[in-house]
Image (cartoon, rainbow, N blue to C red):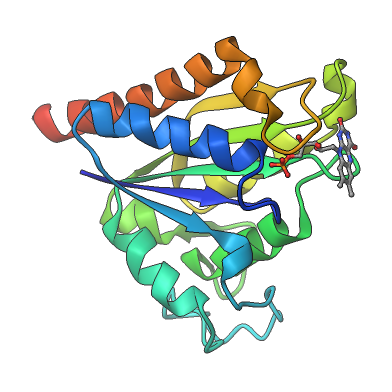
Length: 202
Ligand SMILES: Cc1cc2nc3c(=O)[nH]c(=O)nc-3n(C[C@H](O)[C@H](O)[C@H](O)COP(=O)(O)O)c2cc1C
């Protein structure tokens, strides 16, 4: 069982990073092998809409996403974290999500008919972690919604969508013990879900 943590914050040691790592610890506790990817350390661009992926489920842009596609396809699940930037995900998280467009394919004559790659190869699982400064969930805007809906569209079942409020300065999340525990439990949950999938026969 393999789970990849993806950090969509430009702050390498920031709050999102700490929470994603803690979730990976939870997954590891349940027996997963884990890998951490700082999306800000990769050199990649957003989708160009070229449709080069149309029949292949693979993007044609040659950048660091190519390595990541291999890892994503090999992994059973992901833990994706983004801070809220102006009520939304960060631009780094956005360009990562855009590049998952290649995992969908549409009917040639009716674009309301579509499937994703993982419907063919097996469901993948995801935890999302949204992190914001304000106390009011309204100020998180669409951060969780955008991650959850987009990942669902490309074949991930969201087992937990964490919304972490009231954390501003880099790294100060370590003082919110409940949030750290929540992230650890979410990591355990995704690993346990994958284990269940691997053990049940029908
Ligand atoms: C450009 C920018 C925009 C932000 N917009 C919001 C916002 O709309 N709502 C909010 O609650 N926090 C907002 N924040 C605060 C961050 O979400 C918060 O500091 C978070 O803890 C950063 O996570 P990180 O340490 O992982 O980078 C914003 C921060 C920046 C730098």
